[in-house]
Image (cartoon, rainbow, N blue to C red):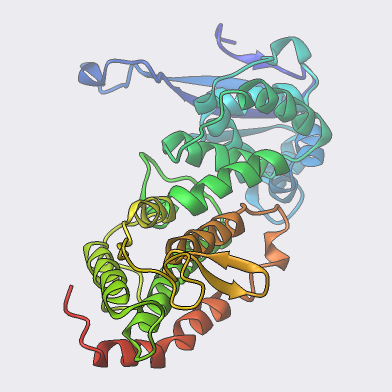
Length: 363
């Protein structure tokens, strides 16, 4: 055996041949004159086929079915399995866990290494108790420094928390994605992570639906001020209508109930809505009580009075609170999302036509 080879089970009947690529190697000196890659080396790991089969249904299928590996193992009693496409360093950590080599198992690791390890766990479906215990230790160590904004590290956290079934971390990072991502999360990132399409689709549906509901709320108020009924005075209503129209035009949501084609997060649109100025006539007074402007303070429902800007902010806050992240049981809770998104759009199609006929201008 070479110095880097491992005998995790000296009596093991299977040797996994791992190709280790040096992550810190100089990319400008990748090959030697003889064509070999100095940044790559083989590590032969002697393992127990029983341990592998118990820990991984993928290995179990390979070693106990009609695969050629199974036939070789049964006929010769030993088997060499090259795994050139696997990430050697994290896979070796997992093999140490499977074989009970506790002294070789790190108690801490950085986020990037944990992501690489999660890819191997996902590929070989290594969800045994020992892997779960160690993953919880690694995640808890990193959780204090979890990202608070949507970044590349957030994608790592999402994949890790999904693979290792960490409900708190998964809910936290998917909430960030729903509020702060600007497109589908599989359209960004330095490299591909096998995050299930169901998660990607659900987050994007939540993001687009919340954006659409903000736009619908703005159009609903706009339509109210385009009507013939006065809410306050003619001058005051005109100021509200004009400032609301200009604000919606600047946000590119004036003439459409569709989410803008440019990349847009819920958080960014919500911030612009919160910052928008709704002008009123500071000299007008409520024609009934003569104590305040109706556009600044008016009754929404029994016992509650708010201004037009307060009404908008309340809608945004409600939508934001609704983007509360996903649970690990999302398979059971996503079938209605497409339908509700379509319904939200359909619900205001007629009202959009009315708005357009009101000649609100072009964006």
